[in-house]
Image (cartoon, rainbow, N blue to C red; front, side, top):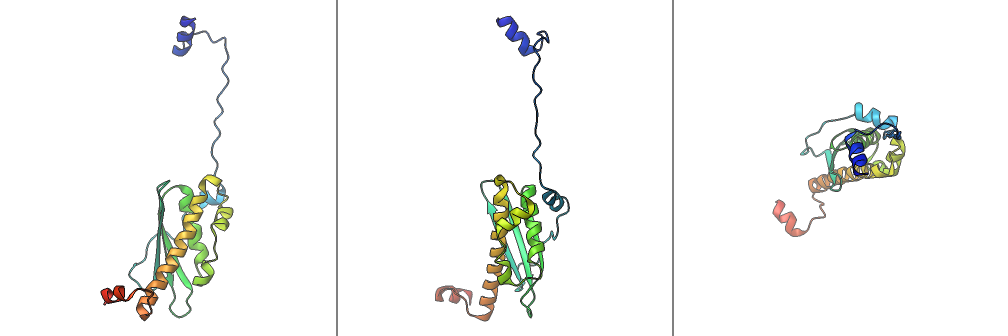
Length: 170
């Protein structure tokens, strides 16, 4: 018995017993994810010190994805005239960033705050295990808008900062 078992382990046993073939199922991504991963739109960065640029930097410690999304606002119209991103992460995170930058262009800051992660996930057909990528994109948009608003408030002197913080900035 031991000889038969060791023979099978070493591949020396007769081939009488047919082993079932192992079926490996590939994990398939939707064509939108593949398109945005292979051809990401708006990769790059703006000057973070520009008063009309908002930067949202978010991350997911559980998976290691880090996303920086920046928006550039037109002073007169208040609309987003350009957007860019840099993302360190999986294909779904890169695709979510790319989609987000396309969707924010031409919209007001109030309009982009209505973009939800569920819409991004639906567009990319993300599986449940990758939903955090679309959540990062939504959080990055919100953080970028918040950054622009904070810069403008500071510039206009109507900061929500405490008197001590305002004195420290002076």
